[in-house]
Image (cartoon, rainbow, N blue to C red; front, side, top):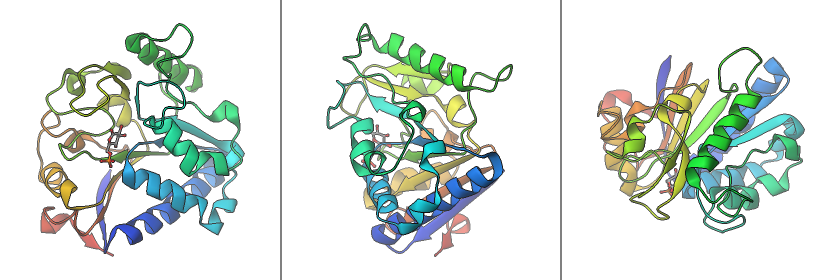
Amino acid sequence: MTVDVVVHADAQLLTEAAAARLIVKLIDAQAARGEAALVLTGGRIAAAIYRAIGGNPARDAVDWSKVDIWWGDERFLPSGDPERNETQARAALLDTVALDPARVHPMPASDTAGGSDPELAASRYADALARAAAPGSAQLPHFDVLLLGIGEDGHVASVFPEHPVAYETRPVSAVRGSPKPPPIRITMTLPTINTAEEVWLLASGADKAKAAGMALAGAGAVQVPAAGVRGVERTVWLLDRAAASEVPLKSRTLR
Ligand SMILES: O=C1O[C@H](COP(=O)(O)O)[C@@H](O)[C@H](O)[C@H]1O
């Protein structure tokens, strides 16, 4: 397993390079397996990358009808709420490519029939993941690449520092009392995140520098959840210079 830290000059280059990298990763996954599975994150840099994929002509080299889309976390709000990670991803990318709707797996919304309980919603998502897993194998499908934004406090998905969810071992968890609004969320847990073949952590701007620096300097996963993230084959940090300014020098690769 390798950990790579790639630093781009600014947010614009980070966005375009990450979009190109993701297109190539999906093409390669489809060449190898005939399909691809992508786990989305929320957040500002992720939304910019989704928009850049939509604007990159190479996106047509991906067979979008054979891409499974999952979410690493979701704000537990009504369907279509602009604060939902799903709503943002649909507007930025998903509505612009020819996905198979049966392969798009949003986390439940708070207004789903019979679904106003976030714990039930989390367990329903875990069931959906288990149904997509290879027969007779684990409880989770294969994820080719799982994207994560990073909070200023070092959270990833909705796994927050020192919160009970940082200790959670079930595949998907409800989160109550999130320090970042909205207070109720659903998230893949760290053990689930760490089953992905590749995990890419995305951060732009000086407000992310401390979190990225602490995670890459070996902080504990409960104190800085980003520090507990490891893809099975590869972990890639995609940063701009401002976000990388506190990353230990030996881990940086400048692009
Ligand atoms: O609330 C969330 O925030 C993080 C980071 O978002 P950003 O706008 O500060 O980049 C995001 O990764 C997570 O998915 C989302 O639910």
